[in-house]
Length: 509
Image (cartoon, rainbow, N blue to C red):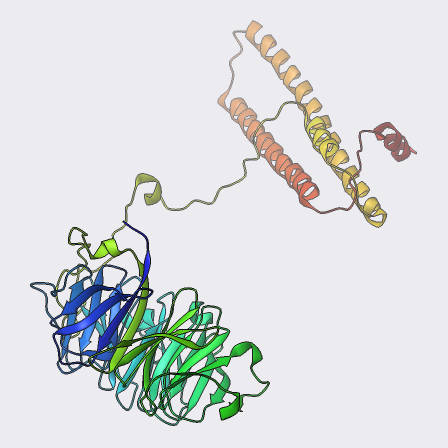
């Protein structure tokens, strides 16, 4: 397999046959070139794990797909969409695709190609899309300055809530920006993460997705076009419209909602052509190297600590997308096999519900009977009499605690002891009654001529059933009393076996 390297995926707006190129970030060696897809749209490059590369055509309503180890696109599979894609995003597992076409958001299931829904809440064209790290929500930004947070579950399978509110409405709608949204970044934590947005209005805003509130708005001197944040979310990097990359430290955030940064206090990465916008940013895994691309047809690699330019990679056109992935160069070899993930091309209309839609479940004999709540069996026989069992349980429990609760524990122990004595006396009475009945049966066996009437036998049976039910109730009561005593938290538990004769004598007095 070879050693893992950090690979840099670059797409440009050049008119040559290369849509995306892959280079080793450290050495600059070419690893792969994906051809035949035209110019990739800004915010239009995605990957499914390390198996496939997606790119949206900037001029045609097409999505191009390449196996990661082949320069040519997949044969026999065309992803034709309803219009030119402005932005696209894939869930981390690659199962769902969202694409912004004009002011609408289209949602597809990738494996089947079915279109699940269309969302129309933006008033102008969608400019950027991004999923949260767990794939449960996605965020869209548009030229209208609004940032919308969507729930993927309700967007993919809209439900009639009956409350007059459309279930496909966004979870949050932020309208704090005054101009078009140019880039988004969602931190770690799913819906509990922070959301970073930049706009042409010179503002970088930080939102708390858990509560849906604006935490901070940082105003820069120039318009902003891109944003990236390190994994610890301590430093925010924004690409400006004048060819500089600005750094803002979150641990030094001011105690105010809106903060204006001055030119002299901004930490800047200077190396791009002045006056050319920085359109995309990327950080390596250790956040020690920053990569920036812009309209000046070059990719710059920076050392984050010193803000020094390490190297510059000239390109044939303006840089539209940058991605950094940790991988082995062996995945670009022809013998590397990719899983088959696409059963059909993308549909251009919403697919109606199918009777065959469903989730397959394995039902066995145990699950077919349903879940059964376990019940306590009060008729279990234990060795020894009830009094001996209770006294052994109590004697085996540890003692200790506060002295103020000792009296309460002693009273409960006396109740358990008295209940056990009552049960023992009743058992003795039942044994004597059983001996009398056995004697009566012997006498009856001697007098064979005397018949046993059915009425007499029915009375005896009913008596035994009643006595059995009474004993069960008494056992249940005794068990509950013992269970309450054992499971309670008395600070002190008294061993009643030590002073049992003394207590009996006190009760007799």
